[in-house]
Image (cartoon, rainbow, N blue to C red; front, side, top):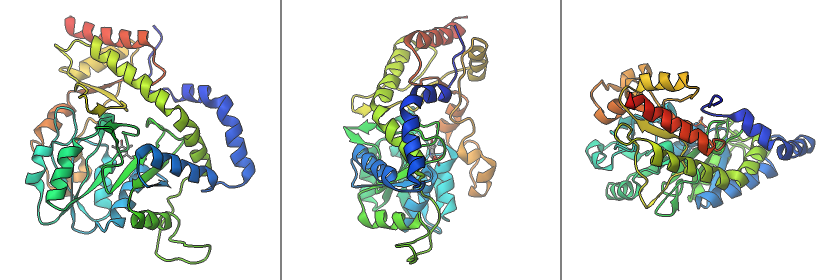
Length: 367
Ligand SMILES: *Cc1c(COP(=O)(O)O)cnc(C)c1O
């Protein structure tokens, strides 16, 4: 069996190339490299997909979280509740606006545990930032109830969950804002940095449209001080093209996940079951196992590349020192950190490859 890479971006390009090159050439010929029709079209499609009134194209998912929270008036000294097992950007966005991340442990499915949220609420709490990790939407029904009871806003970190749903409601439509990433490694991917924010709030929408472009309201008038966080026309063109292929990509990933769920030996391998109300797009397929590092090595020796999302919990990162957390504060997250392993699940993998990976995992534990 030939080597199985964890991701395969050159293959994606090879398959997109013939159709995408003329589209990119048209962008070059237009002379319009930042903003323009491609970006406007992308925003309309993204809002439609997420079932929100607005989507604003930005430079990254991190910027969507930062400027979204600032637009909601979250800032210095405010507390934002979030899980410590995300990609660093969720917490970094909170810290960056002068707010304080308050961590809450997670469930077996790696998403924030709604039963532990209320204990973390103080007078300073302004918002809850659930992360839809692996593409599985967090327990939004419970989280929304808590946020209403305590008058908190919800900021969704939807960077990994484009197209995912819970009770038929798309991720990105639950919070007052949501941040999405179109980083090359995400399910909907640009060829560089890109991201967007969704919201139903017109004031937030108008604010972010100004902020991303120096605060300009026309060529010469600066209404508020802003930044540069616009989306390039080339990236938007790539995203518009790939949005059309997204349903197919999600289906392929869901099919691969289903195969894993059938084939992996549950005696040794834990993975969360899909609940009937969940529509998970499987940005990643994460298993939880004993002897994780040994298994990772073994798989590599059999030509199977895997990954770990993420080996060091955020509260134990050197950057988090001043936040005052310590080992032992979040037992689930800490236990998972040494047990999680991300298997390849990309849309290019064939059934026989998923079978081979599953058999190799099972074989490791049968020895
Ligand atoms: C990728 C990711 C981000 C950041 O997205 P960028 O577009 O790289 O800024 C934020 N949160 C999570 C959970 C992510 O996976």
